[in-house]
Amino acid sequence: MTSRQLLTVGQDRFRVGPWHAGDGVAYLALAPQRSEPSTDSVRGCLRRIADAGYSSVITSALHPDEARSFLAIGFEERDRLRVLSHDLRDLDPPHPQLDGSTVVRRGRRGDRDAALGVDGRAFSDFWRLDRAAMVDAERATPTTRFRVADSDGRIAGYAITGRGGAQGFLQRLATDPEMAGRGVGSALVIDALRWAARRRCRRLLVNTQEENARALELYRRLGFTPTATDLVVLHRPVP
Ligand SMILES: CC(C)(COP(=O)(O)OP(=O)(O)OC[C@H]1O[C@@H](n2cnc3c(N)ncnc32)[C@H](O)[C@@H]1OP(=O)(O)O)[C@@H](O)C(=O)NCCC(=O)NCCS
Image 1: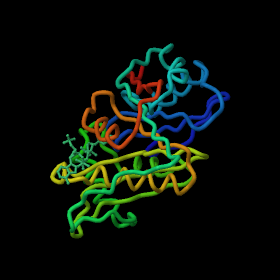
Image 2: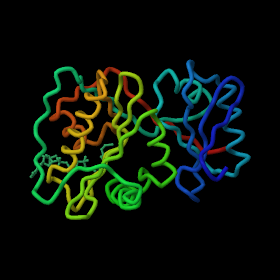
Image 3: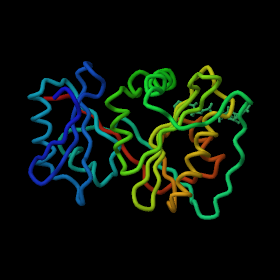
Image 4: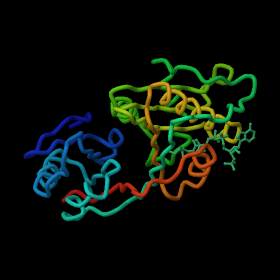
């Protein structure tokens, strides 16, 4: 199990693979399905992860209902994520405030490495994306938009936004710390809002760790409001 793959256990489907290449941590996500996974399926999945030689496992962001079967077999909460929503009807976001040398443009295949570099500098080592995880983020929704902030040919930030049905999802947002505080993050979020509204989404959702005050403040300033439900990321050692 060296890349992320689909695993069917009982009636349930999971996506499983390395968290970061070579670190011994498995990533476990629920594949889209109608109901919560059963405890037996999660246990079976954990067995397969153990057989593949991983030492611990971390889940994707789970709704509290989805988390129940995981908690029942010894998973524990690692992080709690706030889910924020922006209504897209009558959208009127502020104009991006970028210096004259920075533009937001379509991300090209050749921009991926630079975007991963930005991601690695913006997030702590544990939360950075590697290539497989970035591909996963792009495939998480039927339609995806990869945008970069280009500052004189250098990638200053990037965003991945997806659409599924009438909802948009800001999947990932990062600004190079060297370029922080210059409006790059805001410009990428405004770009995502406009795109989702053009695609007739009713709302744009984003989630972020509850202690990420800077991101939460940025979203609040741009008109996002908290939803009632938090998501949880769970982990446990592999038995
Ligand atoms: C959150 C994050 C994307 C913000 O990016 P950013 O490019 O610094 O964001 P902005 O510059 O648009 O806004 C941030 C701040 O700069 C200020 N600012 C915006 N435009 C500015 C400008 N032209 N000149 C000076 N300051 C400006 C804003 O008022 C804001 O104020 P704050 O310092 O009180 O937060 C960035 O910090 C990051 O990548 N963090 C790590 C990853 C992360 O948390 N991602 C999002 C959650 S998943």
